[in-house]
Image 1: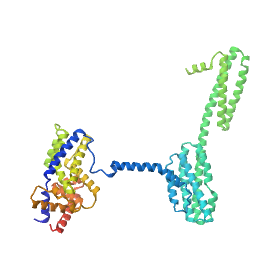
Image 2 (image 1 turned 180 degrees about the vertical axis):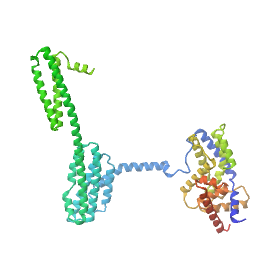
Image 3 (image 1 turned 90 degrees about the vertical axis):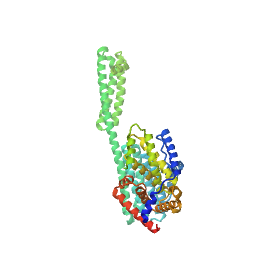
Length: 328
Length: 182
């Protein structure tokens, strides 16, 4: 018989032993009992279980995660706050720590503040580097720092949109002021003298201007929105006051016909005053001073209600009862 | 699909039999075959027994977890499960070929005479020096005597790929036999 054929015939002779057959019988009993008692929970991976699924690895991983979550922010914050200059070999570590710290800020306003602060920090570092090197810093280092400044400003620009859509005017005003300081024109003009840095300086200036313009735009938009809201509100209030004055006139006529003209003396004077307030409110509205128009109209409405109450009491009616009737 | 398997499939479809009863029939028929297949491919009989346990537990879990989980070809399904588990074991241990001295001849021998025992032992030792995927295809083709179509279904490959794999496995096996003057 040839080698290969002999090999195949030998392989085919292979049968499992009696002890293995006995094991199979025992295993069948075990499996059937598992199946009968716990049909779905029967499966428990033993052979294919990887290390990750073993409970003690899970515990270790969970512990490591907790430590990272608690100590990570503290460590990164501590490292990011160190005064390491761009010429230091530890500078990239500091930048990474800053990034980590930034990743853990989830509030849009705080994140924007953080980004602008970092941009300002870059300028301060640049100034310190120049001072340290006697006025002429390494062009490569300067370009690198300016690049970081530009990217921070661009990122801040993206966050400004988020703040604007949330209508956070207060923080936008604050950031607008902060951006003015972060521009650091003196430092940039000092660096711009070197030809190798001109392009980077221009990029940085453009990024800063763009972010500033975005902030101004966002503020302008919010102002406009506020103005539009005030306009609508003042229109509503003036119309309400106008109606109240007509009501007062009707009541005055009623009092005049029932009690005579003399009784109205003081009330009529009050009515005249309030008419002047209504006119002021209208004037302010026409001039575009919607906030003033709202103020005058509110004052007029308050006064009109008092006059109304007086007139109703003259007619022997109560304002509150009158209002209840109106409601019904 | 062979005739016995077809009969088993028919039994499975009979409404008067419970799933447990059918499972028991399947176990009686396939468990020894799968154990033999696993023993041929793995180093120790304990690992092979683990494979058998897991195959039937997984099969039961699959069938009982949903009414929609119907097995089209039970033989291919069980061997697929076995193959996946064997591959898992290989991955866990090492990708390297198992050394010959680690083999457990007593676990794989038939009840035969001493000389025959020695011959079978020799054949198994030689087969263990094959690559894992070659050993798998040789086991399915010559030990389990499956058709190319059945092997293709178990391995999830087309018939052409299985033929090529089998050809390479045989070529390699022949080289090994030649080198060892078998």
